[in-house]
Length: 259
Image (tube, rainbow, N blue to C red):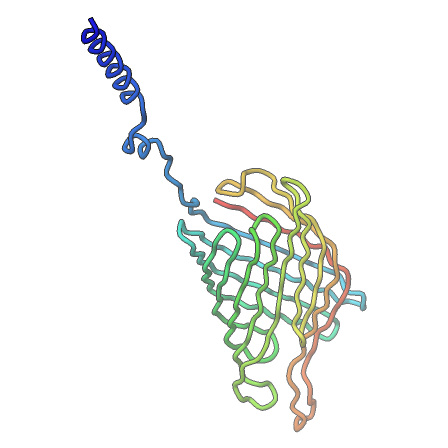
């Protein structure tokens, strides 16, 4: 009787252990249940900004503009093309225009982007040249972030004609989230010889979650100054050519589309 009871107990224990093992997850089943981490989706981004103003001096006006198209790949790379900044000014003494057009590439992650732009510097007066612009973004693009772009130009000196490299301009944007869809946006830029501007405004996400299909709009108030003059030849009967200058309060508008 004792041997029979022991045999029954062992058989019962074996059946219980087998049931437990049948229901226990194996390494293979656990691997199948793990959800793979998806890469960020690739998408395009188009951005346009305009800042017109009427000058405080008589019969003068001006404005700034930016336009850029970028493509974010699934891996940390962003390629694009930009016209930024473009400045136009008019006064009783003439009109002037300055613009920088570049191709851009950046190593871009969620919280950091480091890039470089290469293109041309175009002027209504003066000499055109090459534009080289390093870029930096600290923080999330749609969160708390600081974006800076500082450009150098390679062009002939308007007085000596010798080709030199020097600082051209710096522009930056600071974004501070205020709510889920709303952020404070502070923009500013400086060219020591030609222009300067600063605006404070709001950026609102109309629709979308930040990926493809998202629309942003922005608006702000600030001040702007633009001046441009041609070079002077003091051996000529009229040594200096036309010039243009204007400054005053500005209203900024922005639109961004992701697809």
